[in-house]
Image (cartoon, rainbow, N blue to C red; front, side):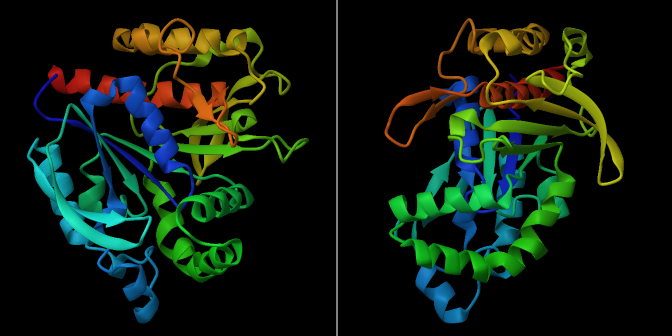
Length: 314
């Protein structure tokens, strides 16, 4: 691998699943090969100051966006940074951290694509767009269990943040190469995270693997749990890959082998024959669950990072 790291962006609203996807992709690539940066660390104000000023963490004026741009550029050049640190548990600004980029850098957070300078630093850009009811459920569970809020406080904060979500967060979707939307099946909207479907909007902004071969297995049938279709997104043609939560290893075998055979570096991490952690989730009671929609999403994004690495090697 060249000295220049490969940079992946994962952007989405609060509790959209950014950290879960980030950690899964890091497992696929090998955690020793990955540096993870959270752009929430670039908040200007701590939690109490934001409340006093009357500004939300989603607003660009609440973040050192210019320093974030500088740090992304330095990371892209393989240079170290002195990264600020925001403590989510207590809402405090903590001691900065010295970071040296490894072969892969994953940058996750709220405003990663908010400026052109920042967008130009990424090799692959992912945007997470779960349905709002699902994101609300995730945020309530996370903030009540890990951040010391009660449910009423979480709902009030989400209502306060909604104008900034609409103005600053959701528009960043347009800059992504892949839009990831996990969603519950319509017939059972209360399904657990392991049974969620995924819809992947795959834009022609980067070279994607040829997945048309899966059409031969009957994937144009809506009842088939792995489907590839041609649609339009924001007025432009895109491929849409859908994997249902009830998909089994047999359903996704052809697609996994397709990704892994194109990028031999992925072979040790394919969920059927290699790394058993691909697509794994921890349930609410601590049990380990398998999600093939999550596994395919992790492998597809890892495919693009390894593909970018090979391009820069050459």
